[in-house]
Structures are given as structure tokens and as C-alpha cells.
Length: 177
Image (cartoon, rainbow, N blue to C red):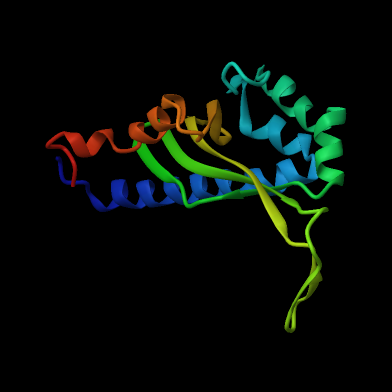
């Protein structure tokens, strides 16, 4: 591994902070239907790959349009929550790869009301599912943008595990720090 100078190290830190901000902004944008956000953060030819189970989209306009579909709007009205884990970021010059977990949580409309002292009463929440995310980002003149996002359900099948394994590939070589 080559030693980075101070300027290169600072740029890497700034890149990671910008990427964290980009990835962390996804849940609030999805949960509010902020299509304007998605249009800005995907490349014009960006891909949202949902596998064989759900329909994805190609192009920032098409990806953004998903947030305005009747189904997504109904999910928002029902209390849709995208809850993510801290992502793993791999920087490779003007390209970056991000791997993260995504939980979809919804209010449990059939749950028994429960009180938590100093926090009120709710029927609780239900984890609808947990997915593995793999984001490919590119540096543009406007900052980091999403070029591809693949999302796979973690249901015991290999598709989700394969996404998670990609985040650990660098540790299989002698190049790991």
C-alpha cells in the first residue's frame, strides 16, 4: 500500500464525509417522496436495480419517479421508515462503492398499545424486511453521484450475501491496511 500525502488524505476524508451525507440522505428522501433529491443525486443514466422481484429504473428521472408512484405514496402515508446501518465505503479514485443494510419498518397497526414511560403509547413497529445495498458512485463536477444501486433481500438466498461479500473483498488480499 502506498503512503498518502496530507492533501490526498484530506481529500479522502472529505470524500467519505460527502458520501456518508449522500447515503444518509436517502432514507429521509424516500420517506417523504422527495423526488427532487433523487433527481439530483443519481447520474442521468443511473440504475436502481431491484433484482427479479421488483421493478427497478434506469435514469435519474425514472428513479425519482418511483417516489411519486401511488404505491410508494401509500407506503409513506402508512408510516414508511427506511432505517439504515452505517455504510462501508471503498474509495477508488473517482469511483466509490458503498455497502449498507436497509431495514423497512412500518407502524404495527395490529399491535397492542404499549406505553413507554416518558415516550407515550404506540402499537409498536414491525420490520417488514432487511436488504443489502450496494451503491456505485462516481465523482462529478457537482460532487458524488449514484451511478448504480443494487438492493437484495436478506432472506437466506445468495443474492443478498453476495452484495455483503463485496464489501469484504479487499480483506482477502494483502492490500488491506
